[in-house]
Length: 389
Image (tube, rainbow, N blue to C red; front, side, top):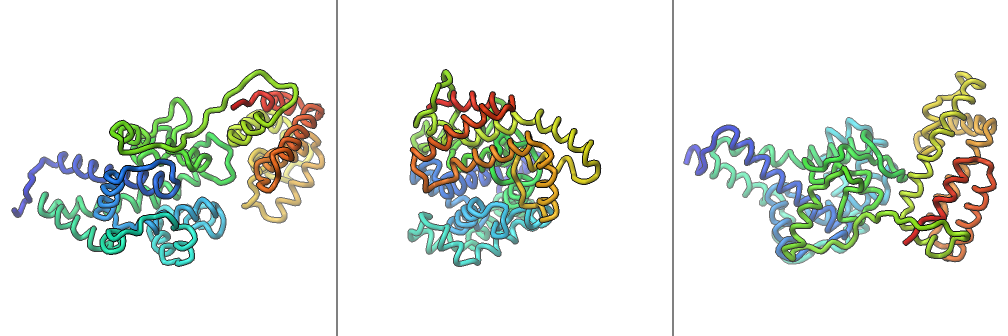
């Protein structure tokens, strides 16, 4: 009993620890994230209760707290109200103290009331799963009984796994460093195209662009292990995906866009904006090089290019804004593509407009793009005419 009920070589303990923590990662991404926070899939009660029980043992996290904090993160992303944005709080703070930021926000009653709706509120949740110390204490005893003194190390790794990988790496690095498939409004990135170690959460830019998708991979070379497990659960009748990232479809260009074209553009708005930005990279490079020659030392070319293409200005001070506005007055092409970018994004941002009004705005945008005299805008207007349901 001193050595525990199970005696393993050193690598056996490593494999057991990785297996146990992997189940925890899968529970977080499937149950807490995709099922509870975003309703991207339905879970059979058997699967749902297993995940709740396992998270109670290995993390002590309360479903309502985690769900509410994550929903607030999406609603207030990269603002002062975001519970854990490295763009606001600094990468070091989120990476090393992500768990502390989580615990602090969990004490905010307004956050729980506003964003925690629809989470479990049954007898088990009230009487058992909300008592986090009890669950992790039982896990400690089980680890010690099974593995002896080394069980304490296994337990410590289990307790640190989610605070480091989820609260630190995903919330920190995945809003700071990586590649982007979609030009969404926040700073989310994909850390790797292979979402294995963190259950698919590595594909964070994909997720922020299509938050209600049960599948986080978007490109043919990306792999989401969480989606693989969801497919297995679905085959067993234990899960039902609701939505996945839509794939753009194209048809022959229409002479005049109609309501179907509008709906296709709205559905694939992130693809639309990403393609728009990609189509303008050469134009921006040439125009900014010309401006640099005429305004040497007066502006940061990289910052201007980033702003022109993405429209992200939350980190610009008033001086930079005035400076960029002045520089753009010396480039008709850049001023035009910036204005057109903002107007294009406004089409799907106007929630109060009728479909007929949005269609008129889209038609007007395409017409002005074709008459702009800018080759890239003219080519992109043709692409817009080709989007189909």
